[in-house]
Image (cartoon, rainbow over all chains, first blue to last red; front, top):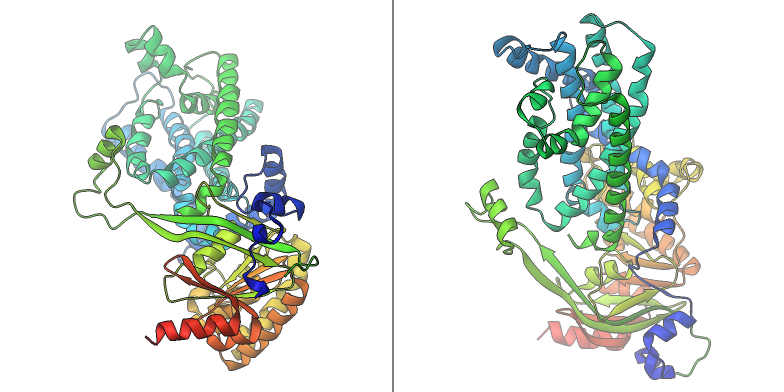
Length: 298
Length: 258
């Protein structure tokens, strides 16, 4: 009989009050942002293990295995070179078009694959989310780490291509390290943003390929950046040149190439890169954290 | 009844849980163009449906209790466990309070099928919040407990090569490796062969002594009777009976034999 008792009939207290007195917390309560960040930090080993597991799982069934990490960027650069360098010949105005094109394709590809994987990150790991407790931001961050790993291999391939195409090896090449750290943080924020957005509105995933294609054409990946100054002016030019991906691509071109026409002064590009990283990195994180408790719902 | 020693560990108050299910769209509603139209006009995807799985459930569980959850398939038992674990959100107006962080021990815990059993053990332990040192120390024990290496070195093979019984045993072993305040067990006792079942029942008893409260979902009448002195009978998301296991079982049996 005693088992039938409900808390409030026992003591006449509201359930919230009984819970508070006994130190119970609401299941699915949203932790504060500093608390969440601490939790995330304590799960850092899970985040790296998960990223490694994803790479192993995706390449484990192929014959060439890890060799694909090098082959994928090489094939990618080859395809774009044949189409835009040989068949259409967009060389006009750029001295070293091979290096120029490869940098654009690789750096854009970094953000593109993070966005694509990020938009699937919550939806495709629903089983894991419903079964175990961990800060959900671990998943989009892991996915960003996988792509960081890929871009490091790609950068080595890229540097060989750029060097072979006749660019001298200078101290300025070291600038790719801070530039990539900024872009990786920017990407992590973007991954968290699309992860939550796509988990609420699945339709976003259908649109991402188109958005990314438009973004690519707006980032001077395949043609000289001087096309913008030739054809646009006023606020339109300002908008186009503030594009974060254009900024990141230009920073790497500035670091690796000698005679290259930039969209702005290096100082302006670095300032824009830092500003975008802070806004998107933090914004994406806060936006993702706000939805923390709803991801299990699907 | 007015026992002052009874410390509540889980309080559910008017808990409603609603699933949103996406998918199963017909042809023509899934093209990129249709997606754009839906976003622009703000209309709901016709393929999204809501399932009201738990409807206003209230109960209190106390320290040292083992509570069985029974009911027919699809009555909301597993959903309720997930909500207690904080994995599914409770709708506005109700709440579930729990001591510490309840852990869900289920046979459905998804792991990565392309990875080896050993890698899965490490990943699962890290996801439960263990430190790398703890994981290292426990990996061997977990694999031994699961018994997957009894017929050769299976722990280094990918999990997709395991039989369903082996995979379930490994998942149970991973989840049972940690101590819990409130332990939620979802049919885990029904997995594996007789030998493993015995071993896992012993492990659950151990965990129960360490844990404050145990919830058990099972279709096996015997394991509910063996483990739980109290039972809650759920039907279509509502509590039909809550009380001593023998009484609730009797009611439930007369209901299903009708």
